[in-house]
Image (tube, rainbow, N blue to C red; front, top):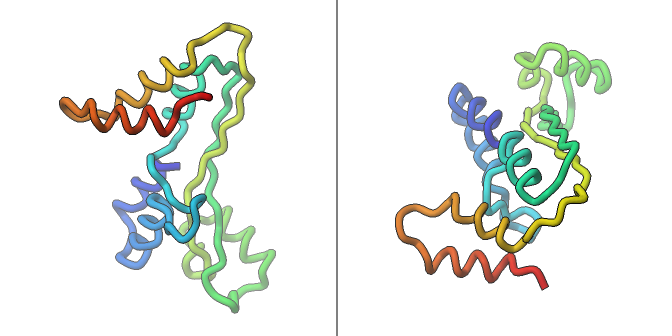
Length: 143
């Protein structure tokens, strides 16, 4: 969840900022870990509805990741405490990462998916960047 991560980044310590930034941008060690774009509730809702999806639901959540091999409080209890009192997560040995899950159902309305994709990609252009748009369009062509 890009928006929640950015809000957390603003008030985070230096150590937390490094972790949040890696979560936002990916770690690049594998193709799935290479983040090319931001995603959050608003973007998921816009993109999915533009592509003809209906019944869109987006749920933001905080993922607690274990930072230390030894958690000072017993594991299950520590997780429950950190979820109820997020400000204690770090002291309990956890890092908090913001995520969003989107679910939707493809609607019955016919849409020109390639045109929708082109329109969505065009929103990220700055000035006259036709060459960049052409590259993005080739990468997302529907075959």
